[in-house]
Length: 258
Image (cartoon, rainbow, N blue to C red; front, side, top):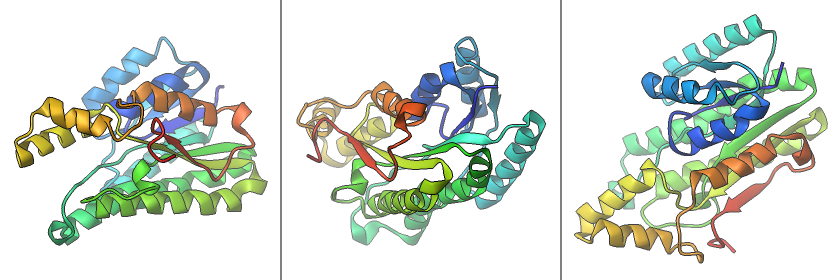
């Protein structure tokens, strides 16, 4: 049986691209909030997948639903007789506000989904990886974990925390056959960036085209990342050739953080 890979936030954007990149070498367990969208991704990928594709929807930012999800996935793994050996903590949300308007609710929501949920999933699935003697944990962080952006205090804190978690666990798990890495994309052509463009337009009156160009120009390459670029890096980190890479924050940003 091919190794079982769990991808969170798999219904669209970077998560969908990651699931597609992993499909040829893995059985897949896809999670996200939108069951209909997840089912469509699963149907698209079944002809490509090396093993079966399973769909388990979840609102990972809700602790109660997250607990239900972990119990359901554990039961599924027991039925399959196989642990999750590749965990891609991709699900996340972005938020933008000046510090004075970053309220407790926004702070809590971003840290819950972007940091606490990856911690909870990693804590839950790593023992199975250790028992199997092989595993990969990959976090989709952000260039916001590596540098500052104005008006993103909560988001940057959550992604910086995710990077700290990655580095600490990499050292802890290095003798166990489990690698832990983070990929840090710059602005990527997804729904999140489209919402950012709409917010800039609404707040400033600038055209959406101009706002999109501004975000693209954060990169010296002058373009947004494509989700498939991030997915290709994740797929490499999930494979056997990346066994010596752990504890890394791999920027994929066209030189923005150089």
